[in-house]
Every structure is written in C-alpha cells, then in structure tokens.
Length: 124
Image 1 (cartoon, rainbow, N blue to C red):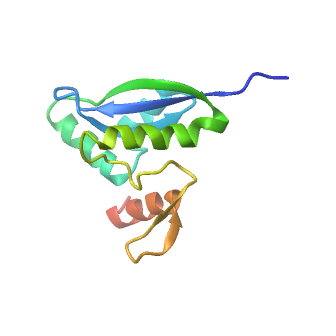
Image 2: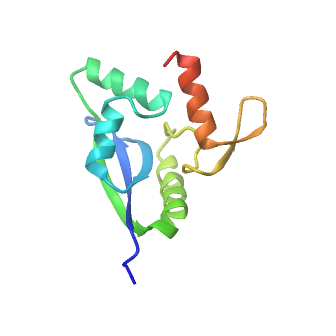
C-alpha cells in the first residue's frame, strides 16, 4: 500500500513586519509560491502581492506543518484560526478549498465559487 500523500500547510507573511497575512495548503510549496506571485490567488492576495511588489518586496512563505491529504482541510482551518488571532487574514472565506462559505447575499457557496466571482468582479 502506498504511503499517504503529504500536504504542506503554509503561511504567507509580510517580509518586513512578519505578520501572517494568508494561510493555505499545497502539495508543492515552491510551485504554489510562484503561482501566488504570478497572480493565481484570490483578488485580496493578488492585491497584497502587487502592493508589496510596488515596494520592491515579496511575501515570505513558511511551511508550518506537514499532514496527510485526509487531514489537510482540518489542519488548514486550525492554522487559519491560530493566525487569525494576530489580526485579519486575506483568506477569502476563512476555510479551505472545497469548503462552503456564504456570499454577499448570505447564500451558501463553495470557496471556489467565491474565488471565481472575485476574479470576475475585478475584471480578470
């Protein structure tokens, strides 16, 4: 039997203040960071990355935990909760991908739907 697939829970932080701004999960941290830097992220994260870039800065990624694929969603939620104590995060819904959230009108939607809607509204 194959070993369970490992998933990395990571944070993106401000490179100067070190404040955690985003929590995510990925199978490939290096590639995921490149995707964040190239615009494959929520509108809020894209805006923050562009603000940093205008100052000649880039977010810092830190892998905070390695978990199995089965434990990834709950581990991500736990880390979001831990980091939210520091202040507001840029996470779209406060929950991981594949989870449910509420839209602007209170309707239950997937986090993926919300991400797509933000991109449409921003003209991407």
